[in-house]
Amino acid sequence: MWEKIKNLVLDMIFPIPDLPLGLTVNNTLFCAVCRARLAENKKICHRQAPYLLGAAVNYNEAAIRQMIWQLKYRGRTGIAFLLARLLRDYLQKLNLNLKNYLIVPVPLSKERLRERGYNQAALIAKIVAEDLKMEFAENILTRIRHASPQVGAKDWTERKKNVAGCFVCPKPIKGQNILLVDDVSTSGATLNEAAKTLKAAGAKKIIGLVVAKAN
Image (cartoon, rainbow, N blue to C red; front, top):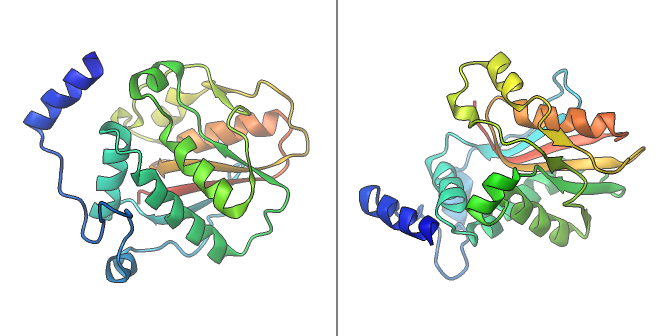
């Protein structure tokens, strides 16, 4: 009840932006022209980390930022379908052998999940899993602590400290390969902490995959 009232007030103060060019109400798909305009990341990052990172598009794209914002803060869950398709198409272009991988979404805290009503990363990951006929494993990773928003953190060290110890793996996953999915990555601190937790629980290979990566 209060969440609906809050959203109504916010919509009055900050009107919901127009849907990005090419996003239609009926099928929520980009037209070919708009899709071609999106800057696509071609490679997976091999920097020193417990995982490999791949991102479908650039978060600096206004249309992408707008859709992720609407999905996370305005309840436009249908947008998860479009973002998942962007992620799926990117993943297919990488031509990776994902036969023995589980798709695991980065979890929200209980507080955030209760407030939002859904985990946007899980919505996206589940669609990708269904499209690629992969196993979706939502409960492998759990978030036990509600961290402050990463946007407010000043640097990598602070962001890393902010999420330290916030994930747990309820069950051993020795030798399991994981495709770790989230909607957006800024510094990579959250994905890094999630991957560290999975590694400590016995995960073999981890690929972190996000819809958008901020530069």
